[in-house]
Length: 266
Image 1 (cartoon, one colour):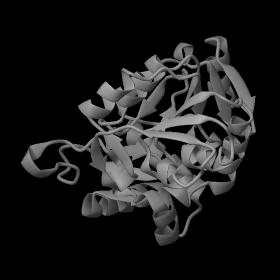
Image 2 (cartoon, rainbow, N blue to C red):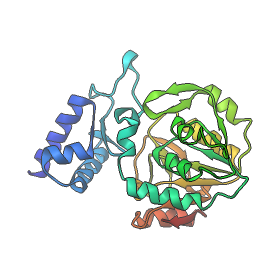
Image 3 (cartoon, helix red, strand yellow):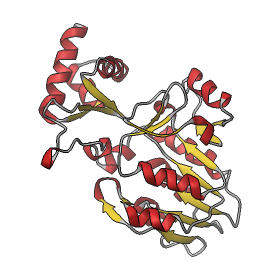
Image 4 (tube, rainbow, N blue to C red):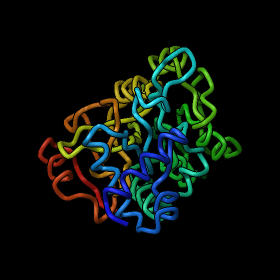
């Protein structure tokens, strides 16, 4: 299929459903996932659609991502259930989680952000004498029966699609926390090293977690380099350690390292 015809078909499907995944588009159009990713990057730069982790959303004004009351949806993950996100790039996420677990010392207080990679890290902390503070119900489920882990669940409003707690109550609870390190997730890392996310409710919590921790560790598998997202979380200078995979975008990693971030490859 010619590129222009493929782009037209992609846009038709995005406008029809409001969101679609790389995997579905590749299957439906009979091309490789890498071809679809390149198509989505072109369409995102053109302003035709909004590229998000694992797929695309229609942009505001196309009639597909406007919610009740006319509010523009800035929640890319709501288009993909947690289980679907968890099943994507599993090997890379497991490698990142394993590398990150080696950074944790006995007796430490750890903040865990939401996400499927931080959930995997939580699994690797089972049986460890550590304190884990989290707003992630997925991490909570992993650790709640472990007698060795001191587990603190932050309160707040339940965000069902991504198994997390958000809002002013969560932020207020974080103001009482002093952690040794926080393990953050994100939607992607821009070529200049900027951390971005696509979920409006989660960005202030990520910033509050960073403020509560002595060290900021970003967990991002190689597919998030370079990444996309509508909302800035922080600059690379605010991240102490980045854990990712071999094969992550080299220029982006160099930008992070130049800002003072220690880059660890899994």
